[in-house]
Image 1 (spheres, rainbow, N blue to C red):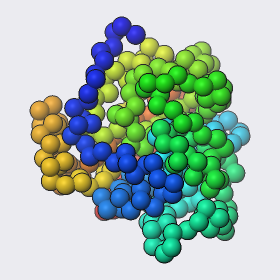
Image 2 (cartoon, one colour):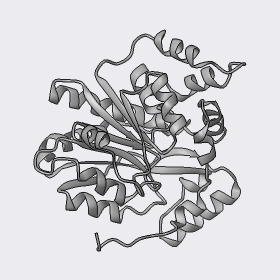
Image 3 (cartoon, rainbow, N blue to C red):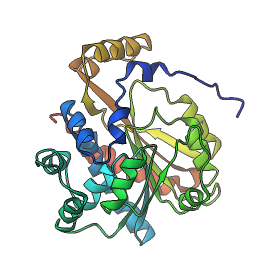
Length: 297
């Protein structure tokens, strides 16, 4: 796609703390410990949003919903949605126990919860093979795909799965994945009859112009909703905060009451095919009317 500019090094990713080393561990405890340290709570913020959408989609389609989670790590969104959990409950189980729970104890933990939502079928995408292997062993997904969509081709199995996905979500991954990933996904989504809905968070520091153009080219309307901004996490240190605010200031983005309080904030986006607009835009309106961000966490 010649109209897109290649950005070898994104300024935002240079500014932002790199946590990639914690995603490659066999079990999620190091990830959860680090995220707890910076009060990473945006999965708690998005859980009621995703839950609302899956319920509305289920009522519309009259069947279970197939969900693709981009940048899923250890299957956190799946755990929270399927079992009505919150991040602190996962922290209590994985971090507080000594020694750390075995995979059998993890399986027992989820099996003993009130009940897995039978209407949600999760498929996970991430670049961390250990994280995806854990999620599969823990029973948090129907299948997973370890791929860097920005650089690697999609497997035939992934393409087939994409053609049957109802809801594509991402919590904190946009920016690490960009227009190239979405372009590859759209190649396997029916341009004429798609009922696929996208719902994801994007840190306010990331540009969305190129991604928006990909959606438009494929006859999908991408909307930045009025929900939020949503608190994502605390800054890792003063340097990350300083550089992030400087970047936003240069772009004319007002940080008062948001990033200058010491936290990253994200916007919530939704998208659907233009021919489905009468169906999915009321879902956006309803969410905007009733949702109140959890600012105290």
